[in-house]
Image: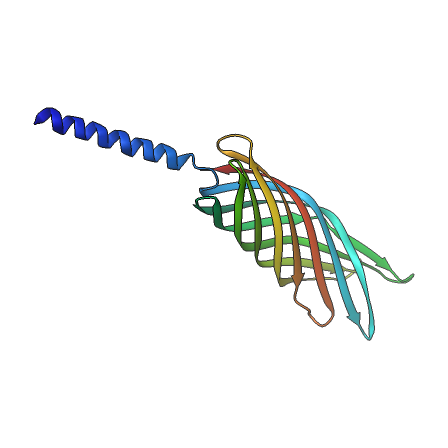
Length: 196
């Protein structure tokens, strides 16, 4: 009887350990965080005093992200938060005044949904909320404000080790119309993520 109990305990321990090891190494499942860098391109439509037009802001964006994946067979659902800084700016001069517009920090919260196209590569779409700070200056007086918007995008992520993945992502963001300015953004980014 004692041998049977010991054997059952060892078997249960082995099964539990095996299951834990398997779940801890399941690709694209659980907590992850990382960093990314890429190209940031804004287009802003404006209407001031009946004069309308558009201008562009281009630059480099970098930031960090963290999220959680829920995997079901070959499908993955998740939530992700991002924080980024951009140096995208644009300068306009009418011969008298020079106005500089800059994009600053951004925050976003998005949902992800994807499918494994190989054992180690995930294709996904993502969408959600974004908030970005913009600053306008004429060299003497400056003003800034944070605008809300929505973002949609696609991405491809592939494991380069058991716990590290490389990803390429595109996102399009459309911000609220203030009545004076309505920015839109296209961002292309490369990132590294560490999975736990």
